[in-house]
Length: 295
Image 1: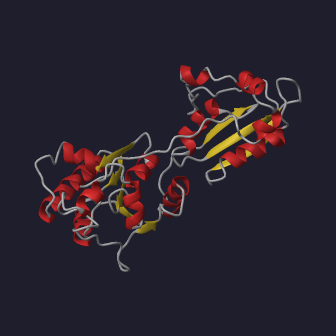
Image 2: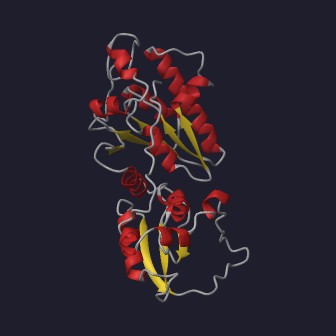
């Protein structure tokens, strides 16, 4: 029997971004926008239609749970009565209120739906001319704040507080001379999704190919991942061979061709030691913007 994690909050509060960071191999993400375009394409945005949309979503979540899948659902779910309905339909459900101030949600609204609602072009928009009932004092659920905490910290808090079943830890072993964007792409695939990550740093002797000490590399990595409480580092003796157990559950990460093509040697040749330690060789990390939801 699977479990359902139900994220609710204002449009553009960060529900979808958090949900995508909480999914795993046996987890299904149910998103409000997707259901509106498929199963609930016949519904409008009246309170009755919104409630019916959530009833259908809850039914899908329960069916998936009964098949052994975990579900992460992201829906506005503005009324307490609607959350009570979800709890009646879904046997194992935990609610997370994504508490983001209205002004922050409006700033994140890349489609300008809040602005259109304020001009009267969209009726029944939650937070403008339709009410939103936050988590009541006597209502079970976890409250998180995306305006003041990073996605990674919130994901870690949700996993720890709700004692969610997580995927096994990931261990990445390397020289990291230096840590570059190819490394980060691989590590981030686990670290940004709340997995426990150990970055093992080989204690290589100093040379032209190994200009940074193990401690310098460790300091750089810890600076890069300082907002990831699920990431830890350790220095290990230099390693010649890594033995992978046969049929005991270990797996080897497959590296995409465009990532494997990023060269540590070229990075070292292009930047000086001080620039490497300051992280100037990293590309600008793109800001993740999401289309606002209006379930």
